[in-house]
Length: 162
Image 1 (cartoon, rainbow, N blue to C red):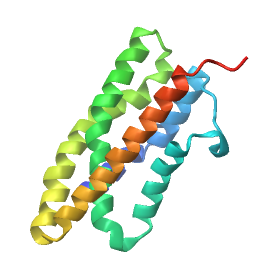
Image 2 (image 1 turned 180 degrees about the vertical axis):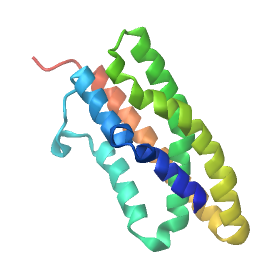
Image 3 (image 1 turned 60 degrees about the vertical axis):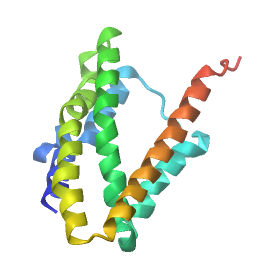
Image 4 (image 1 turned 90 degrees about the vertical axis):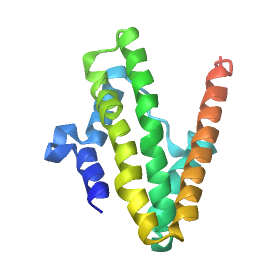
């Protein structure tokens, strides 16, 4: 529980409202003048990715799968955010666009390692039946991510509408 709380504290900007990750994301969106895509216009894969979190977080009996899915998120986000941060810097993005990806590039690799060592391993040691379920949740997160990124790539490769 301590690791989960530490992770959440980081997400909440350590009590600084301007550093809360959703606030940093809003700053990124404003700095790059990114469009807001209404849910009904998003690819179904984006909605599935979101729905997985909601399903796992609101069903107590799916706690092991939630631990796996959240751990997979932390393990994948650091390298991905590092690449996005490098791309934004290479393209000369405004400074206001960088904090969201900078903080994730820094903390998510630590979160991923600590999630495995301080959350997953102790939980599975205490509840061995959780092991396959944690892996199942990580697999679900990985599959939804792969489908989402494939859909995003396909959308980017389509010719623009006239």
